[in-house]
Length: 254
Image 1 (tube, rainbow, N blue to C red):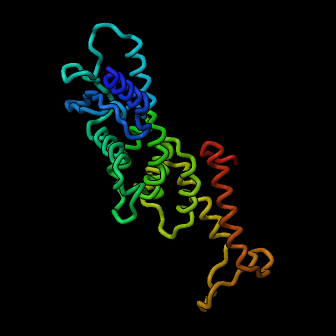
Image 2 (cartoon, rainbow, N blue to C red):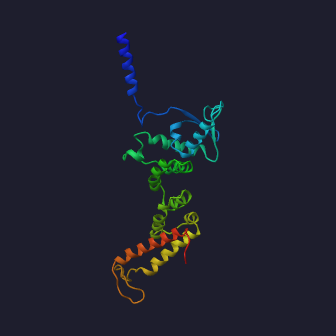
């Protein structure tokens, strides 16, 4: 009897000392989601990273009842409207990739970064469904795969304010003019901003000499020469003008 009691006590002590790892004890509950005519069987813990899905599951748990919960089977999936199966696949690819130590964007510098065709749809859904942590991590990735015109359009769509001023600044100071598609994407106000700043640069900044011997910085009014620091001031002034334009709702004050 003493041995049995001792063994039972030892077993109880062991069970009381066991804890679940806070990071790597995954909930294996699966949720069936249907988008268009495609069904996905996804781990619930991945969806709980979204405020939208977390609220959805919380409401379902409060409702209770004997009726099987949506998402519990292929016959009773959670149906999502207004998104495409392809975009949801991109979101899941990024979500699950982040759990793998080989995900190039976060852990490895040797592998190529994900392309825009993966990052952008995932970003849109992360923004729509409030995957706040994922959205934060996708911002620098998206920044690297988008050109400045696309950044402006994407920043307006998803309210990424920190992209707008730098993107316009680079467009204002690049040598290549806007093409028709870029102008259409940016819109009339953006085209006017770029035109206005470029006109100011070419009006106020110096030209090469007629002999091709370099630049002769001069005041266009009195003819006095000035040093190269004025170029830096001009760039800083254009950045301030762009920032003021953005703060004013992308409209001119005067």
